[in-house]
Length: 109
Length: 115
Image 1: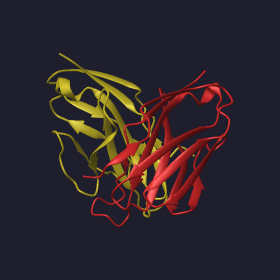
Image 2: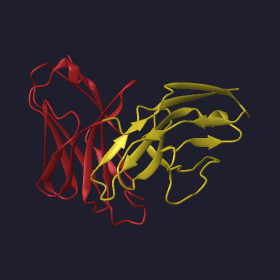
Image 3: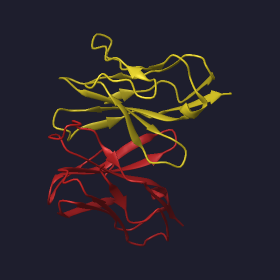
């Protein structure tokens, strides 16, 4: 069963424009949601977790349990935000971990 | 900072060869994972391990096996490499008891080409 869905494979926005990367999930119970980012020629790294409710590099993501969504947002995109973004879900023990197929974000100067 | 290292960044092997990919983490994490990363398919879990000598199949275990003899080391084995196993392989570790929850920490990846 598809646990994490990222509907957009590719997303292009202009510098300074708002950006939203969509993520929907299906999971029974209370999952932990993450956004990971992979910049060119770098390793995959954590961007943010829903539990910490933090803003990292201007990005935020709110867990909407009613819509089972965890969309990633930034009000003003920067060129350095160009990267591959993965939404991910973990079960409570961490033994279950599911990634979406990723969205490649390009910020056009 | 958590450090996850992988034995090779690039590897070229021939069809039928036995291939070993090694991963080491230095944060005493219980959980370790092997994924393959392919364009358009995202990350797909091959195997994971939640303790020494324990392993569980992921979504695509066929053609792979794993070994975890020590807590810090998790090896992925391709018994007889095939061209459809050409991919980027990522190792990760996590600990449910850490202050970052179940956050996974990734190695730099091994790009394997099977000719």
